[in-house]
Amino acid sequence: MASILPPAEHRNVVMVTVYAALSLILLVVGERIPAAGLRGMGARIFAPFDRVAGAADRLLTSWNENTKLHERVARLEAENARLRLMAAETPRLREQLGLPAWRGLPLRPVEVLALGGGEPLPDAATLSAGMNDGVEVGDAVLTSDGLVGRVTESWPTLSRATLLTDANQAIACEVETTGVNGIVRFVAAPRPRLILSAVAIADTVRVGERVVTSDLSLRFPRGIPVGMVTRVDHDATGLMQEIEITPAARLARLRHAFVAPGPRPPADGIPRPKLEFEPDPLSGARPVSGRTTAHDTTGGRR
Amino acid sequence: MRALGGLLLASLVALLLRSTILAGLAARGVVIDVLVLATVTWSLRQREAWGATFGFVLGLAADLDASHWLGRHALALTLLGYGVGRLSNTLVRDSPLTQLVLIAFATALHQVWVTAFDATGGVAGLPWLAGRVLLATVTTAPIGVLILILGRLLSRRHGYAPGSSTAG
Image 1 (cartoon, rainbow over the protein chains, first blue to last red):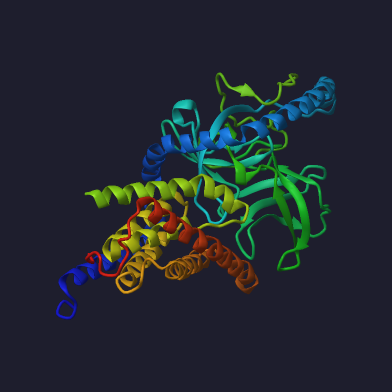
Image 2: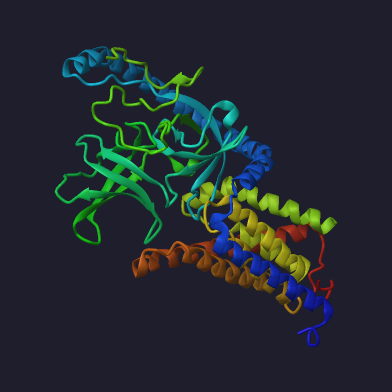
């Protein structure tokens, strides 16, 4: 080849071959390379720029958002007053039924600095808080609308969350009204969508019902909204249902989110589902000091 | 040294756009392949050696940003950068039509390559994937040409004539 091509061209061909070979090697063995450190370095480099870009974006949309938020606050305050009345009754009723008490979910507000990963839908997000702020791998990431994903990499001042749109995520969920259990996962083809799979054909699920995280989940606290049923169909085998759901959180427009501590792994390292008679639905959650809570603790722990 | 600085700056801008504004647009269905746009623009100006290097660096950074398939973008963008750089030696690089065709072709190739990794739905998924490739192509190509024209007007440089710079 050296005899045919001029030296500069030869050098270019060699260079491209090296790049292509490196890329091919990475494609084959890339999954085994621990890239979390590199991603952390990248996140640190990009964080200031992401903050500037995010601030400009927020500035442009702040007027509309402010109006909407005012309306929402008024609506939520009215709803909150009604819920307070009900909350006073709930602990007594749960005690009479012998059910464990609900605990509040400690939340840490974080800023979503950047979305990354998948195409066309992002499957990861860089968050503005890290290990120094108490954010750990496994923590749930949610917005006021619902579940967004979970923290998969945590660095001192930043962290990275894998979103629901990552094809490798599988979340144990249930239909809120009926308690029908299933697994929510993202499928990219034939078109990108969230589906609730592994639902028996005999179970009744209706369009419009809300899907929330289940108590069977090893990674997420119970009761976080995940989405709304938009279509009910059979899967390829015809033995199970395949239920399409619309995400509760607006994954396309993430700016702020909350991090909630995920269940702590057991001492023996073997994860197991929570049992029905466990005294506390969030028994595995790490205690977090100085965090605000989403709901008041309704008291009455047995 | 100046080219290296430019390479890093262009990569930074492309990745920043991709992770902020364009990510939101993509989730709404408007896919602008900024990786291809940046690689083609860079390769047209800097020829194949820098084009391939830029493609590799940008692709690797994009791969690191994704959770899976390290090397996926790097391979495609390296080859695209090299190919476009080579073609720029013989094509009239100032011609908007040439640029439109180049960017459209490069976007289509890149999108086909990228979607191939998501094509787990068999034949049923082909219409959606074809739609995604088409959408990315028809949005990226005109925007790319506009950026190139604007860039040329702003910099008032007309150095795109064939043979105006040496390859490598």
